[in-house]
Amino acid sequence: MDLRKPIAPGALLLASLLITGGRADALDLNGAWASDADNCAKVFARQGAQLGFTDMSDVYGGGFIIDGDQIIGKFARCRIKARKDNGPNVSLIAACATDMMLSSVQFSLKELDADSLVRLFPGMEDMEIRYHRCLK
Image (tube, rainbow, N blue to C red; front, side, top):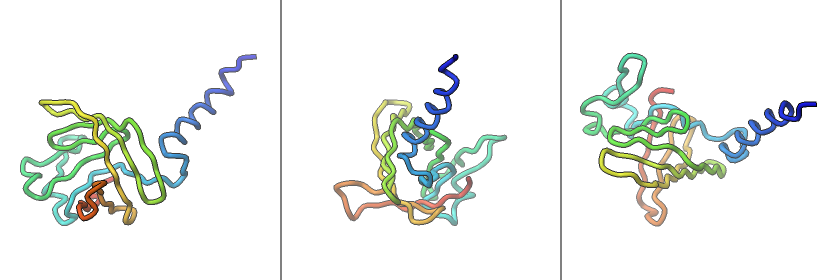
């Protein structure tokens, strides 16, 4: 009897539970997120089949794109290494690269609704940035 067949689906389930923190209703972060919903078309543009940033995106508040375990900004690209969901709060640790350096970055996010979230800055309670999902 080949024991790998029954183990493989269980391993996939365990991996998905670890990535989502065990919650079936984990916050879906995939999509293009802008700091001002009215400026989505000024921040993001399709380049063929690929979604990217307009040349002047940072003038309109900027944003980021999350695609699976990738966080893509205009000047940096990150890979999510760890995720912990706690109710409407999500903590991420990401390895990020710019043209000049590599770094590890911690993101603390709080879901406001299905298409709105806030980035929180631990230790700076009055500091937060709101983002709205433009495209999914």
